[in-house]
Image 1: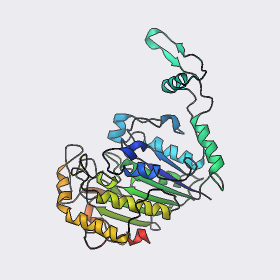
Image 2: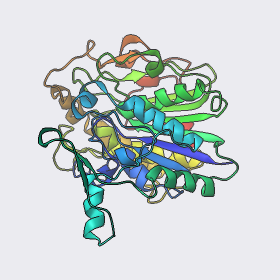
Image 3: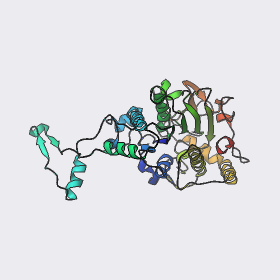
Image 4: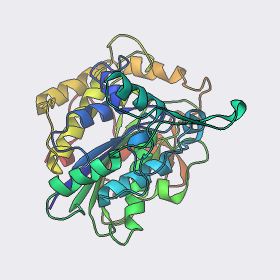
Amino acid sequence: MSTFTVYFCGTSATHFDSHNANYWNGELIATLASNTLDREFAHWIVVDGPGSGNLQADNLTVESTDHPYAGVAFGKGWETNVRHALNMIKGQFEWQREKLTAERYQTLKKAGIPIEDVEIKGSFWSRVYDYGDRKVTPQQLQQQIVNQFRKGGKIPAKVNIVGWSRGAVSCHMLANAMLADPALKHIPVNIFAVDPVPGPLNFQPERVTLGPNVREYVGFFARDERSKGFACVVPHTDGSTKTSVFPLPGRHATLVGNAALDGVAGPKILAEPGMVVRHLAETCLRRWGVSLAKCLNLTKDELVRAHAIMYQHDGMFTEMRKHSYTKVTESQGPDRAISYGNQWAAFSKVAGSNFAPAEGLAAPLQGAKAPYGELLG
């Protein structure tokens, strides 16, 4: 029986961000996907985030509804992403790109492939261009890969979901969609979420709660983010779920590899939070059955040293609180304002016996130790 992994990119982020210059060693989600050694489509997929420009539209198993502005502002398109992931878990498609696009048509023409001329319909004011049909659609190719390489039946035995920002909230949405699907509700799910930010008006139950199909939930949250509209969510999980949440210094993008002083752009200065999250993501994924290349493989001493450096640079991290992606800041007292389930809370108040470790987001930034025994085993 197989394991299937879904990588959800964040808002405006794409699978090409493994080479984005704003991230000193590649944006985390895109980098994890590009380093996955198993067979794409049969064992894993990567999904571009809302508002990222429809770069994957031809390859989705549902017709794309992403919009560049509504996607950034409100997450429009992430329901489509979740439906696509559901279809890929089942090894099926409900839509396929049967028509050639203008870009694909020109590519074939330039390559000297015999192809019919473009058919032009309509009047001068309302012309429609028909570039012809595809002989084989991307969706048919994907399904054939699933049929050939997914062993033990089409439905995988386990699903891992990894995401950042709205991609992390998409992890919650997919897990709940699986629980509601009779064919998938029995599948155990593991989630690795990095600073899940749903955005304004997006705190519905399927985004802020999780059911008993989630076996393990690991979340990392940015302590120093203060942008208005960037409240993260710690989901309410089922009592049977092993739930581990950890605070790290820095802003929303710091945790996925941005090492700039302002958390946006600049030289590599504050790299340790992104390095720690990447190492622990790789550790969890390998423990969950994923084959990865180019892993950091930090030792426990190196983790302790990374925490010591973060502790030493704590003043630089707290200075980040003056910056905002939206030009306006917000907080809850001295803390970041967040949502615990559907209730507002102060960042450091999210703790208790339902978390492992129980300190939750109240864990101090210490130079003495790195508190990840629950993840490292």
